[in-house]
Image (cartoon, rainbow, N blue to C red; front, top):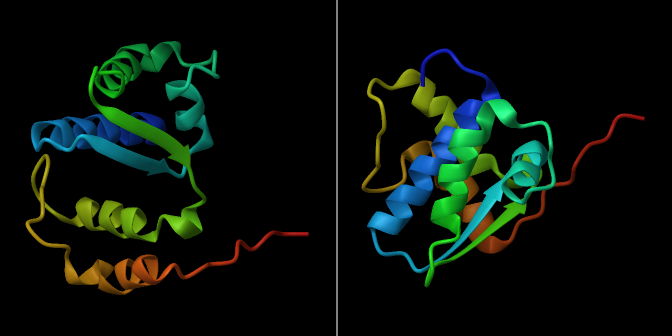
Length: 126
């Protein structure tokens, strides 16, 4: 994604994911984002997002498409391991945007854990 902030990178990835889901005819979509800032921006709860207004508007326009149900939710990083692995994998790959026909082997264990409903405790510093 070139040189940009982590917020812009995550918003751009979200926009591409939404567009891909829409293009593939997915009618109901639940999106889990591990950034409370981004969830707040998309739900209109944040006033400090002028520099991201254009991309937020494009995401919101897709999310609010009539006949398409999209839920945006926050989750902690521990519950978003597959996305974290894919993001790290994306840094190593060449190309602007890659769609895997099947999940890469690196995510097989976290996907299995997700399917089983495995809980990962959040560690807090005291």
